[in-house]
Figure 1: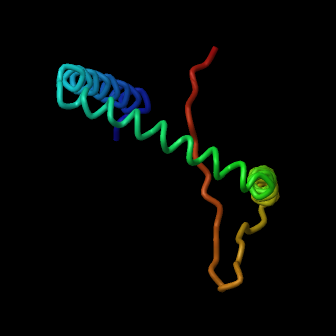
Figure 2: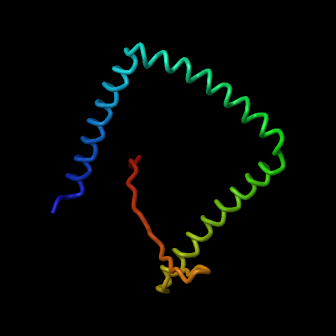
Figure 3: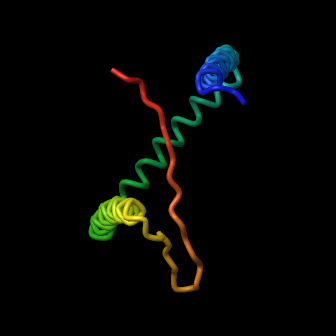
Amino acid sequence: MASLEEVFNRIKDSKKEQREIRLIYKDALATSKDYQDILVEFEAIKDKKKKIEQDVKVQFKNELEQLEGLKLDIKTDNELLGDLALTQLMKGETVEITDEYENKYQPAFSVRFIKAT
């Protein structure tokens, strides 16, 4: 079985190779005249789209404010749900949720590594 260090280094090397390939690809696109022409057209269409979206946002101002409030409520409730599940798990209790269709949900925990300071 591979060690943590070996797998970490393999991931780091793969990410470096990914960056190099992406850079080569972006350079090739930058030198393509057809691609550059399409980018100019794309920007014009994007500006037109943005103007239409702004006009519609003015019409739906109240709904969009309500949407932002709901978004914040969902984020807060998701954090609370995670905290409650972790607390229940640390107490040794079973952590499971059943929805209105009798579907059962169990928590999925993940581990991330960040650079130590």
